[in-house]
Length: 107
Image (cartoon, rainbow, N blue to C red; front, side, top):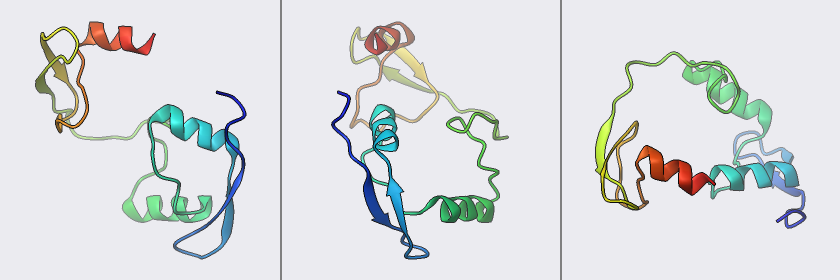
C-alpha cells in the first residue's frame, strides 16, 4: 500500500550518528520480508562488511559473492504435500513450497 511509510531518523549503534531510514527503504525491507529496522548507517554497514571480508556485492547488491557449494535440503511442500528440494535448511516456523507452488504463491 503506497504512502504507508514515512522517513524515520534512526541512531547508528556503532558511531551513534543519526541516519534516515527512508520510506522507500522501509517499503523495500517489507517486500523482502525483513522485520527489523537497520541498526547501522551506510558507512558503518560497509565497514562491517569489509571487516568480515565481504565486498558488499551480494544478491541484493547485484554482484556475486563467491561461496562454497550450495547445500540442498528436502522438505514437504506446505501447499501440495509433495517433496520439495530447497537451498536452505527449513526451520519449521515458516511454510516451504515446491517450485510449482512457490511460483503460484508469488503471483
